[in-house]
Amino acid sequence: MSDAHQSRTTTPLTEHFGVEVHDFDLTEIKTEDEFRTIRELFDEHSTLLFRNQNLTDEAHIRLNKFFGPIEDRMADERKPGEGFKVPEVSNVREDGSTSEAMDLHTLNLKSNFLWHSDSTFLPTPSLVNIITARIVPSSGGATELSSTRAAWAAMPQELKARIEGRGIWHRYSHSRKKISEELSKLPMFHKWPDQHWKSVWTNPANGREALYIASHAFKVDGYDEAESEVLLDELTAFCTQAQFVYSHKWSVGDVLMWDQRAVMHRGTPWPYEEPRKLSSICSSAQDSDGLPSIRLDAA
Image (cartoon, rainbow, N blue to C red; front, side):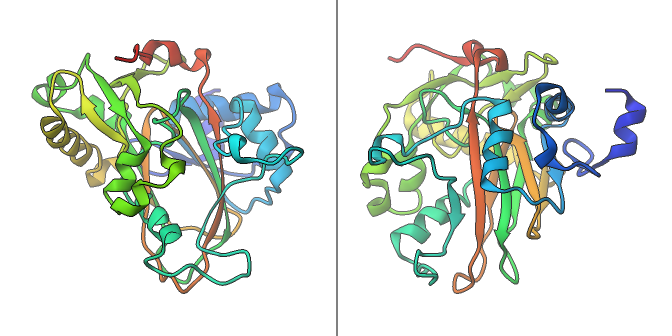
């Protein structure tokens, strides 16, 4: 895309990453040619915001499929004949009531308040998360994004040297244990073995590097777990400084998508007696997204 075209249709979200894309109806993307503009913006800016969208479940799934295979963590639990259901990040129960502040469902939502990239604990991690807002509370409930690409480029060499070239181990239950020991023992957090990824993911579209970490990370090669925790906390703190963060206050109809290879995110609290519902679909990374370059053998 030309710079002139981008300047007419996008507005920066921050100095370092992210753009709002204007006058673009995501439901109209039905061919690879129509999708190409979105993919170019995605690789260049890591985070894209579209307002005033009417993204049905069908259109949401179709859009995700252009990025890659739909991630389906519930495939093993689905009854014969049941189709994929769009995941919801929500405190709304089936009867319309809201979950209590300390029940396990809400505690799981609170684990999303930790800085993370989705699905680093899966055998195939995700490339993108596309989220649209269905119900928003009167206050709070923002989604914050941190550019680990911008942070990596600005990181002091002394800190870089402690992680560069090393692998990192990821475990789903590890992030949940930070919130609740009981929560971390649920079977859903033990479906997959620990995953081992390189600490830096290079985007093959442009050669730009990003630190690949998450709240699911628990062990760095060459360090014990206690040393790893200290280092991972230090790296996360550096990446989540204000200059590398965008905080999005949701309105119904907003669509936010980000590059999981180069962006961490977290939710923020809201009054739990108020409903909040976001529809969220991840697409899995593929070889063309640089997946082979970060894959490490299991121990």
